[in-house]
Image (cartoon, rainbow over all chains, first blue to last red; front, side, top):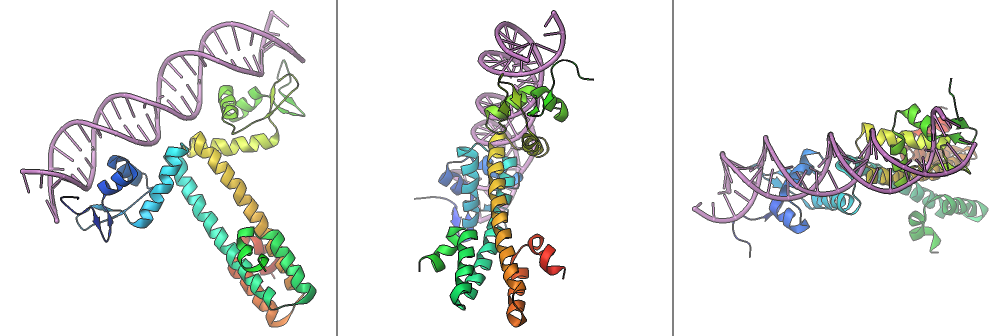
Length: 134
Length: 134
DNA sequence: TTGCTCCTCACGTCACGTGAGGTGGC
DNA sequence: TTGCTCCTCACGTCACGTGAGGTGGC
């Protein structure tokens, strides 16, 4: 039973709660914030509040630094690249879905040709659900 | 005028030539090789030979470590991600080009619809050359 | 008051880069 | 021979993580 001040409000976790959950020093969390890797919001009393999204970011950071030995400069770059890759995937996804839509409205050799290209060119995880399973 | 052994054969640059070109210690190049970041081929006498491709890889590495402060673990991951992003871009490119081809064979509202989607969804650098400039 | 929060400063450790030292082939 | 190559071992420096010390608000 936790005593004292609540460590978890609806607005997020306080620093010691996060530190305990991930077995990490509170100062390290402050370091990550100073480096711009993980910037939680603050309460009106200036206390850090970590949201669920912050915790996911933290897990990524810990994976990179603890398991893979990446330093903070590298982590920043990798997080940015991840973001860009996600965007690219989303664009690809949207585009593929549109062409699939076109596909459904056609028939005959043209349909086969489109479908062929889709399978050749689009990553499997984008086409599997709608096209190849049929 | 360089004396002694040739530092540049048609097969590639020897380590001291590369070291001089990039103002880097030969031991550092050996370190990068040991870490798997930059693995040149070898002559039959076991001498390292750096190709043009190796030098490009080296420039990327130096940019990451010198200018951005990324450590070697991070560089390895970033190089891999770059590779994957290039692949994604190639796939995207091929797909967009195919749809553009389809586009040219159509007319009327259907063409407009396809073109619209292309512009909305494909990154500008993929469409500029063939579609938007017309 | 207690137990948290905030902050700054400082130390220990480890990775990276560099140098020395000794070898061998063109 | 000279000047390169190969290798291993070792040191200096710096970033990162952790701890101490002192403050303030719920």
